[in-house]
Length: 164
Ligand code: FES
Image 1 (cartoon, rainbow, N blue to C red):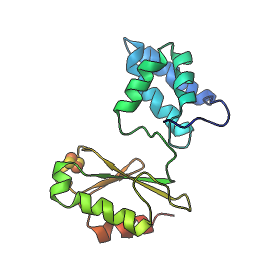
Image 2: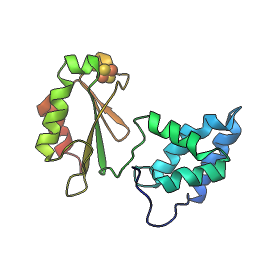
Image 3: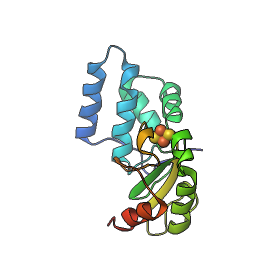
C-alpha cells in the first residue's frame, strides 16, 4: 500500500518545468514517465505517494494506472519514506558471490534496522536491490546517487559512519 501525502502534492515551478521539458523531448509522452518520477521523488523527500501518481497523471495526461505500472516496476523508486542516506546494497548474483547478502545483513545489524526501515534518527534506510550494473567491482552499494564499490563489512560501515 502506497503512502499518501498529508497535503496534496504539487511540484515546484522548477520541477514542473523539468517535466514539461521531458515531455517535449520524446516522441511519446510515456517515455517521460521515468524522468518525471525522478523529479517528483526528489521533491518529495525520496519517495512516491498515490497523490503524486495522480498529480503526474493530470499534468502529463497519462493514465495513473500506466504511471503506477512504471513506478512499481523499477526499484529505484521508493514506496515509503527513506533515510537522509538511502543505502541500496546489491544482492544479485555477482555481488552475492562476493558476500553482498552478508554485507547487507551486516549493515542492517550495525544500524539497528530491518530492511526498508528508517533509523530512529532519520539518517539511514537500507534496501536490498537487484544488479546496479557494477558487477566487476562487487560487492557494492549505492548511497543516494553515489556508487561505493569493492566493499567489506568493515569498510562499508566506516564509510556510513563518516556520513554527516
Ligand atoms: S550483481 Fe551487483 S552490481 Fe551487478
